[in-house]
Length: 214
Length: 214
DNA sequence: TAGATTGTTAATCGATTAACAATC
DNA sequence: TAGATTGTTAATCGATTAACAATC
Image 1 (cartoon, each protein chain N blue to C red):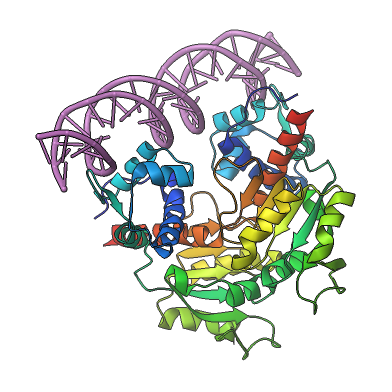
Image 2: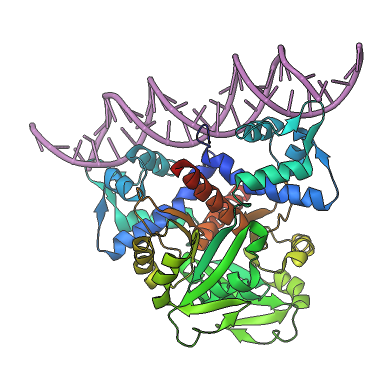
């Protein structure tokens, strides 16, 4: 189905397009040109047209792009219409914040269940999500189609837990542990949310700004 | 001081180097070559040498790099030794997770104080961080050197709060609101931690994998 | 039809990789 | 000195931008 390999840069821009298109849609805007969209996003019109043309012809010459239609097409490219499922591992602060705050549904995901080692948490429900004991996880993975695992365990538990997940056939991990989970050549898909990397990049930009002001 | 502009790609790799060097240091490894480091990180030796040479000559021909020394140099480039300060705005789930879980000190930051609109939170301390009322923020910013603001308010409050921050002279925001805060050409430094963008990228990779398996 | 704007090819720019002289 | 590995220049590769024909 997929023709050529899509570059990482393009993929990282897709969610940004999606959010902007949602915003335009909400504002009742039905049509937009690559020039206008580029101005709002800080991209060039060329880049936008190139990006979209990786996946097909979504616009109409002389008219531009239909906002709701384009929105659906990008959502589909991202897999938002595939009914993906997720389980959460680790209901600590960050896990809790995700369950309570992050709207998985909005992005096409169904958060089936959470797992934790803490007996004080097991059996409870948080924001409508049931917490099961870690021991129940292998069976759960066997009996359910779980597309991604959200990993929010403490740092020390990160590596052993990841290993266990991979042993149980998990092939995609959304990683909040701030630890590298796998070797560079691993087959598992890992998406890292490394808070420290983000903060340090910001720290660099701040330093650079301060230095140039001197 | 800074010579040429450092590319974004290089900057994003620096925190990754830092974490790896910390790991090597902890493991008692004192010396490493670009080849070995490259193998561990999944980068080419050339890239590593190019990256470091953006900032100076950190290695020694015939020997390689001194791990603790290189670690310190990268930490310094990132601004970790500058005693930066931060305040947190919004002590909801995600703010709470950051205060309780994220070790600002470890990355060279001092989290001075938190601010919230909720009277039920104001006056309390969480993990040693005092929560003040939002009204106290402008004065606090006037009277203290605050290098970055961690923005963890609800989505609806994101834009007005950002505007208020900018009006009060804030020039760097670590943004957890999942909302674009400023126009593309704004002078404020914004580092986004967009959970949804990250999840959707993962969703794309998962879809791509599924499609190619068919 | 005329104007607008896409889809797509070609040109440019930048980042990564390769190669090798310098040197520890 | 010989071997190893950097620093750095040159070559390649890929991504972005520009240009323009196609077409709505």
